[in-house]
Length: 511
Ligand code: NAD
Image (cartoon, rainbow, N blue to C red; front, top):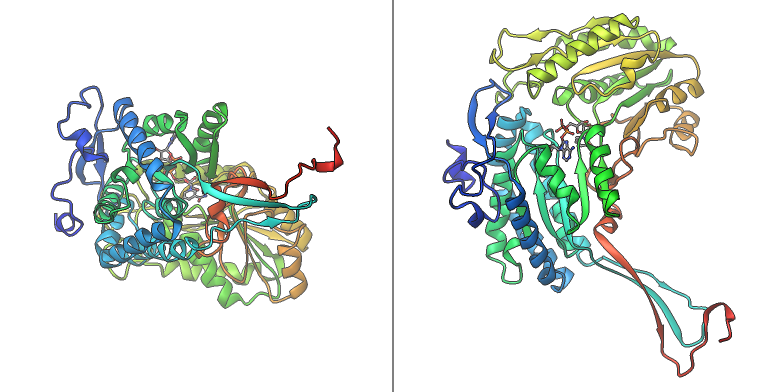
């Protein structure tokens, strides 16, 4: 109730979509089944969500398509000015938005604020980009000819996002899409619709005050799997950017491919860190604990496998156990809490099943793993992060269980460790802790880590927005955020310009 006015939410409307005019009456919704909204903090209900159906999807896409035809003609630096103003507005609402992320996703305050900071950072990055959407000029083989490429706006960008980054993933996509001249339709996770509504309200105010920006530039479609399917299937979506599980990515990629559309996939990870004999164990310890237990194991980049040289394994495990015992687990709204709840009790059940499977496959739970009910809002799904020694990389270790389980494996030589790391089907994030330049170069070289992110003396999670973010293999191959990720949001046109008075043909063809 205190958050809502600060974010411009006069009421938490049932299933509000954008454009709002479409739902002034609830007439579109009679057949839709409401989804309950609960906070992972205490499982208390705070409303319900009416998912979008075909009528809302149609309206959102038609509006976005119309907005695109206008927005693509606005010069890119002016588009950047809109994003600059969005960034300014987000700065003034950082704490309120972070509180909403804590409420819906259960993140501790500093991580929730970090997520909003990612939105602010990507705004700054996108503003700079708006003057650097550069193509190349190539040497033509023909006299009085010029060969160049241009990058043009692409169309409507559909964004499907996961619960664990309820704002940042959309922001990465939407801020780049905007400077690239596109409109956006967002289908957030059905577990975090209020974050999406608040973020959309914030940008809508800015769009409304910016003359060159058409009203339907940033649309919002609430709902679950079905709403996502509708977005993926629609030919008007020029790029579908989907973040979530591998299962979701497989379904969406096939739908988009069937209409020969473009998709950008950011799917699950099963991230590993290798600790070599030369590692600085103090530094490694911090990186491992934050990576494995932080966000209650619910980041795509969460550290799930620790591959430790046998000479340092016992010492490291003892220090990890001590560090895990000191973690403050509980209500994420309290300033001292380091580990909040899992998103729901289904996630807790998945964690228990994984631990049972690990034990059946020869593993030993060294620390944690149980549910916690004392000293926490006792209706939430709170757990003690688990450390599990495994004799080998068994079937359960190949799976991404979205909970704080760290499997610990031992190795003898680095080739074996790298092979173990690369043996899983996912390829998102990886790390090596080593002070040996040969080991480091082998790890980041062409026969080293096969992941999209390969870090040295830094953990697997907590990427900066300046680099291209994403992973290989089952993680989907997409890249978002920094570097040249903007290219995915534009189409390339190659121009051959003849400024002479004859028409020589390429390759010397005579005709
Ligand atoms: P999820 O796959 O259950 O849901 C993600 C989104 O996809 C939601 O909006 C959901 O409604 C939608 N969806 C689900 N099935 C769909 C379908 N068949 N068609 C269309 N849309 C569908 O994932 P989650 O539980 O919200 O998030 C956790 C997962 O997301 C983990 O696997 C995690 O690794 C991954 N993730 C990846 C990244 C990354 O950048 N690689 C970032 C965050 C999360």
